[in-house]
Image (cartoon, rainbow, N blue to C red):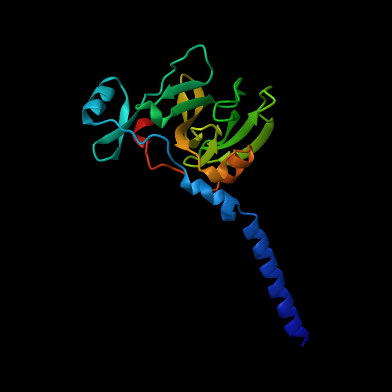
Length: 225
């Protein structure tokens, strides 16, 4: 009988621990499953004629659907007076690329809510990212949050509860060298936020979105070189 009690007790402990682990995973919480309902804010592309013109201007285009393309600008220091570089896709409805210098604290926490990024593993591209909003506007709460990401991981940031219900799905793309500096590259695509996630609360939204793969299916690999 003692052996039976031990077995029953062990099974009970394992079940309890399993339930605890499940409950701690953000992607099992029904509220956060609404992240999977995020949709592209504007499903607009660039046709073949537009693609040809964009490529003449130095952009690299990726096909999204038949005869529809999204074009990204080349990597370059476009704003010499700024540490963080921003370049817009074409069509611009598909968002922006941001290049953060490795280890530099930004002076604008509104850039995808990123405050600082450090490359911690050059071999895998893993980064330590600090999110923050230190805006003095009392209607926007202050917050700080830390996470590690590898290329291809996504999160949701910069969400507004206006009638447009707009936010950003941000993908960490790559770490690369340019003009003697290491930059960490992010692409933020404009999206519609599901009603279930509004009003957005940060940093909870960032934290719980990271376990999800929110990639919108646009592969910019060819544009990284």
